[in-house]
Length: 294
Image (cartoon, rainbow, N blue to C red; front, side, top):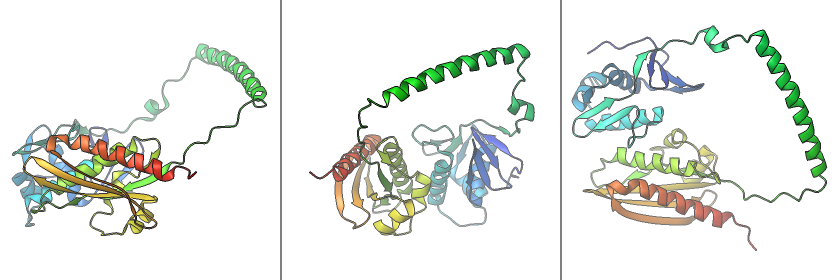
């Protein structure tokens, strides 16, 4: 077994701290389970190389009898933590029938110095120029404020905006007879969350919150309370050859009633289009459900 680093590493945009068991980026701190951290470090130690499933089983799962499915699930979980898209990977790329490759830049982490954080000190001329600009800005602000104050007396009443719907996505179920398509169902769930998150008329919890419900068998009401939403989307994935059948439905959390459902039979390559279609169907159904009743 190769030795594993304990010092902080930079992997892409993330600071990886093996000792603390966490990764951080731009003030965001994410806890990482011990075996998932070992997987990340192993791929980082072999950055740019193809690491086979067998090699990962030998090194990351040493002494534990597991199947390759454990590797698939761990890689899917690691990608979610890193915010990586398996279709356009910037961290972990899948090499079909061979394994995985770390494609992000890997190096030692260097803490920013106090001087770099503070930036260069401004000179006297810069300060004088800044003072003059500040005075001009104050005059402009005062003039704008006066215009706004006058306009308030004649402004029309604001147009009412429709309420923002809060909808959560539950992890989709793998209903393939062999039950070996968990990475695929995870990717569909994550892709749908991403699409719904782009709609400014919706509020959607991120995939980390949704995947906390995986395997919990929670009712729609229980899941909604956990996610802080009023509606939930659930669904299933079946795969046969190069085709998939994806079923999705939108439910009210308070009573469990289905207000929209659809099934899609498509080639595997069209999964992103299915995610778009589901997101559009959910948004349309929510708009109709929240429309004022005349």
